[in-house]
Image 1 (cartoon, protein in one colour):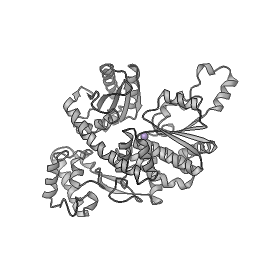
Image 2 (tube, helix red, strand yellow):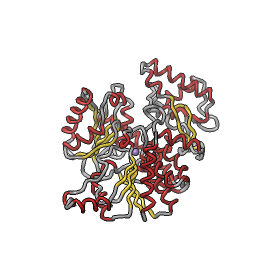
Image 3 (cartoon, helix red, strand yellow):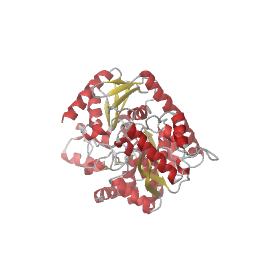
Image 4 (cartoon, helix red, strand yellow):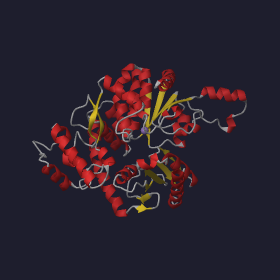
Length: 478
Ligand SMILES: [Mn+2]
């Protein structure tokens, strides 16, 4: 079942072994940071020189820079597949799970002189990709950037199986467990390997964020998937709820989920199910309370590194503020300077998110027939506007996708879209919509069916919204 993947991974591994020095280029989110770390550690173990560049987005300019630098090999991780058509002349491997633009780079017109020179050129520069889409798999759930990078790493050296835990953090960071409430597809293969070798333990538990680190009442207060009617966002209500159930909030210190007894956990969960159903939020929401969770066995209990989701959030907190290197060092084992820095960034990130959600409430969300949107202008950082959109999406009972605009440093408008699952199962695909709609107004975009983004010229927002809305309508009709 995974033999296609492993065969291609072995081809990429061969190409990596042949290289003298390697430039890794990776994305700044949790999946990108874990991907880059997996690639870096496997190059270290091969004794290869490498450098890593983290980028927010892989654009034409970056590819041109790489072509001018002309390193012996570029290893793109968690990005690159969408830009293959521009990579002619570059010697590269790509381990990515985003929708590929092409499988081979396009030969520029001026290079198509004769058939002979064409073949010479093609042989000189080669781009090899490992991407689930090439095997007909859905890159949003089957495997993450860190996962495909891991498959190559384990072909390079079996010691790299210890990097399987990072591959799980990457997958969870990209929310690949969120639909089935467990990892599926090729992620499962990696998970079992990580479990067999004692790096990851998995079990069914509450899916709340912060089981390892937050006081239980705070964990409930901040719950956004699922949203807890009358509890989410209300500190006093959450304390009251636990007290009524006879669950002490504090012993020597605030009790976390991991400090509770089995009976206490069971009681809380069954009361939450009752609460959700009694408020007629439906069993689908209630079912999201429980799912598979992933523990990094070699990390300390009570730290964000112990739980895959918390680990991913820690990494995201570094990347969102353009400090992905800090997360990178944590992935590679730093528990001192970089780890402390990452923890303080996570703390600031949380405060920043809360205030950003409040800003959107102030600005207001505009509802249209097929979507809703807000424009944050300069008031929300373009790098977190997508998370803010996800947080608000979970509040919505109407099942409309949410489109967020923010001013970007580069003078354009950053667009993030987050969609309810129900729309995706009806055939809506925002990777296509973002790509095509942004192109029509002179921008660029892409991503996944359920979460995508774009960059569009300032002033084109309303035209862009019209095009997006029309495309949603058409995709729903089909
Ligand atoms: Mn990814």
